[in-house]
Amino acid sequence: MTRKGAGVLRRLLIGTRVGLWGGVLVGLVTMAAVLAPLIAPYNPYRMNSREMLSPPSAQHLLGTDNYGRDVLARVIYGSRVSLYVGMMSVAICLAIGAPLGLIAGCSKRLDNPIMRTMDVLFSFPPILLAIVIVAVLGPGLTNSMIAIGITGIPRLARLTRSQAISVAGMDYVSAAVAIGCSRTRVIVFHILRNSTAILVVQASVMFAGAILAEAALSFLGLGAQPPAASWGAMLSQARLFLEIAPWLSIFPGVAIMISVLGFNFLGDGLRDVLDPTLRR
Amino acid sequence: MLAYVARRLVWSLILILLVASIIFFLVRMVPADVVDILFSTSVGSSFQREQLREFFGLGRPLHVQYGDWISGLVRGDLGLSFRTGTPVLQQIISKLPATLEIVLLGQLLAVLCGIPLGIAAARRRNTIVDLLIQPLGLLGLSIPSFWLCSMLLIILSIVARGFNPIGYVPFFIDPLTNLRVVALPAFSLAFVSMAEIMRVTRSSVLEVLNQEYIRSARAKGLRERDVVYKHALRNALLPIVTLIGVDIGVLLGGTIVLEEVMAVPGVGRLLVTAIHQRDYPVIQGATVVLSGCFIAINLITDVLYSWIDPRIRL
Image 1 (spheres, chains in turn purple, green):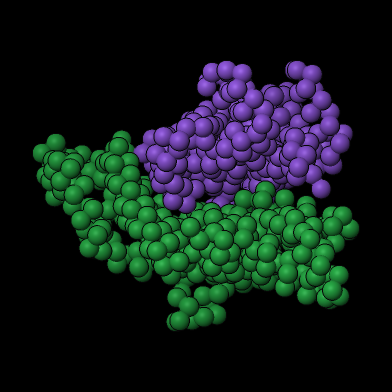
Image 2 (image 1 turned 90 degrees about the vertical axis):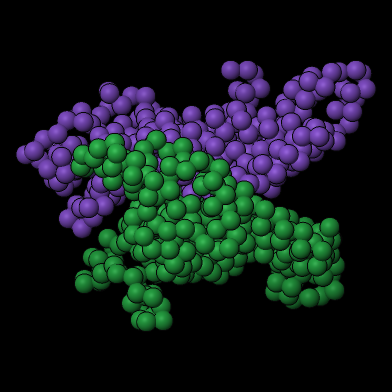
């Protein structure tokens, strides 16, 4: 990690209260995902017909589901799905949305065509667009990641564009142009580099949104397919047992809430650290 | 002003046509079509399959189907459902009230709670009020609304035995039953949207409170309430109005999932069922109508925007 990155991290975790909380929650979820095989008490896919729908107890801290699978193990393994989906969809969104926004902000000729295309994507309600894309690509986790990533592109492109425009007006950019930097160099080394702060903050917020979107898609049966241990898919199956086995609905939801809250806290903290103009 | 509204109106209509075109081609890229789904449980000869495709008009060249769809759309004809054979527009119109009711009721609740809470947090910045309200805002952004709805359902079924908010009835037939069914999903959506409105109100009001004209308002001895509500809020309203417009899109998406939870027969549920059945005309129609609502809301927001702040009229 660069020295600057370490400095930001230190200020984030020590300097801001929300940043610290975000770090703790995200750290918790990441640990669960990485250490899942070590900390999960049971195999999340092992069915046990003798222990179907048993309520939380000493053997099964969060109870078992309708196939007798341990809910705690499935919740722990579910963090892998959520983090994976979050990471991939944010990556897709950044890889396409940021360059588009950057180009639109720096090129007068391409600004209109790109941003009008974004307007068209923006006129679909967000989840609806994801649902339709998944319907086209077919249900499944990979396709939900692509769908969630695409859904985020217009928002990110708009944000990058407005940031690029405001950075392009700075004196140091004029200075770079004046000393004869090439266009590409100005865009990559001056404009993009000075837009990273806002992109990092947005990535964190998008990560939170991606986890929520994956849960919604899986809940509708369009995301992770059984027997995958995904929080959304678990909630979807739990619906049938809402009254007789409420624990099936409670814990995956709490897990979603904790991880989304973590990334939202982190986003707020990062904004405080990276964007001093917004600090109050 | 009129020219601005006219220009925005034309662009909105173009957007709807573009959305309709995108959805048309997207739907036709779906791997298995309606005939495959219909025959998934029974064997049919390839001749039968072809005949059925012919019957649904799927055998025709793509550009002919596309022309039919767009010209129908312009005339307000969304075609016939593959599954029920009834006009899609009629199906959607019968389901739209439930969806709109949930979204609008939710957004109304969100505005009524979010703005005052946001103002309270801004006025009492860094006090216990602010410190309590802020995490509430982040919590709202972090709870999946469909999960919140299920949790409320569990709690209510324990607290009030016999509470069974299933079975949607139109408002004008039985208002009480209607509200009982709609209240939970509307509240669940409201909680999410309220959090966002609250956060934006807080930061926007805070920004305005630092302005010089607020200082002069205070200096001339206005009561604090007048300063905040008449001078600050009015100038802080722009980002809030934008957010309310954008949020309605999020809520329109959110009801799709909530309608599944509460078994409310809305457009979202119609759409999800149609996707599973590959009922192209219904998928196309529902998407266009939902996006159309969103585009219309955005149009209204933009017009409101220029009405609130005359400087924006371009």
